[in-house]
Amino acid sequence: MVDTAERYRRFAGTEARGHSPTYELLAEAVAGDPGLLALIDELPPAKRQPNLLLGAVRFLGGPVVGEYPAFREWIVGHWPEVRDTMRERRTQTNESGRCAVLLPVLARLDRPLALIEVGASAGLCLYPDRYRYRYDGGAAFGAADSPVVLECGTTGAVPLPDRLPEVAWRAGIDLNPLDVADPGDVRWLECLVWPEQRQRLDRLRAAVGIARAEPPTLVRGDLNETVRELVGAAPAGATPVVLHSAVLAYLPTEEREAFAATMRSLGCPWISNEAPGVLPAVDRLLPPASDRLLFTLALNGRPLARTGPHGQSLEWCEHTSADTT
Image (cartoon, rainbow, N blue to C red; front, side, top):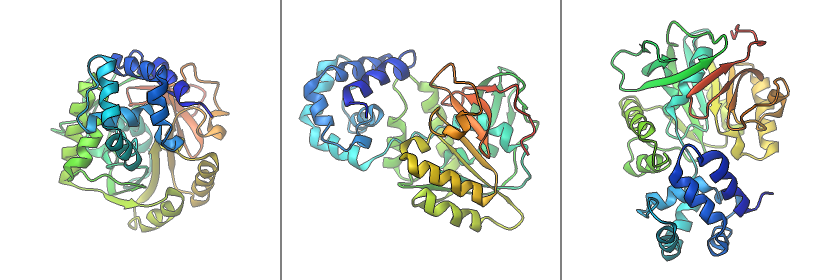
């Protein structure tokens, strides 16, 4: 198991670098701070994540912009509140931008669709038919007058859709569903957006407005136990589609394998968008990723593309058939 110092050092060097100078500086400093690391190590391993610490500090009103000593002093002085928030909350980044890489697959499935998202957070990725899209800087298309416009650059023979999917029903599963009508839950989502990423914050707020107007069905439960129930609850005449993005990495290996086996047994379309190493059976069908931060988009365990973690890029695999139906 990677120790906490190395975990923060890797976060600084491979995830925050080039995307958030603020978080790169803070995470690197934490990695070299034995006293603060000792406090973080009081938490279970799954709760020691850099994003969780940084989000908790912001959620509680602590300083993240400025010099490290002020950040450290605040955490030490408020450690019981920080610790309790990290225990209670989860890293539940709900990035609607990922719909831009899911759309080419969703648009080619038999419609209408009954969307079922695993690890749904607040369910913002359940609204691909309520957003607008712009690929490669071209003209935007999609839901008229939507306040959410998703930008995505593409590489390769991406089967760009000429229509939006028809969604008849939308539901999600999460161990701790977030409510878009709850100001505290929305504030937590906002605190998970990195400080310099104003565009993502504006997009999140606009997507929350869409979800508030038409709240999804969100079920609290373990994904391996609940996904069958939701697939069975899909309305007659609709195609149930199970999707997830940046979720399975938080599960132990045996639970990921159990979920994959469940999806194979259900027989409905299964769209996964996960980091390398999360679904080894999928990764083995592609050459190693040149960028370890890229996700692999797959349908029913068959890889289709490499994708940016926030939906900002879509690199289609040329040797993969574009027929995703």
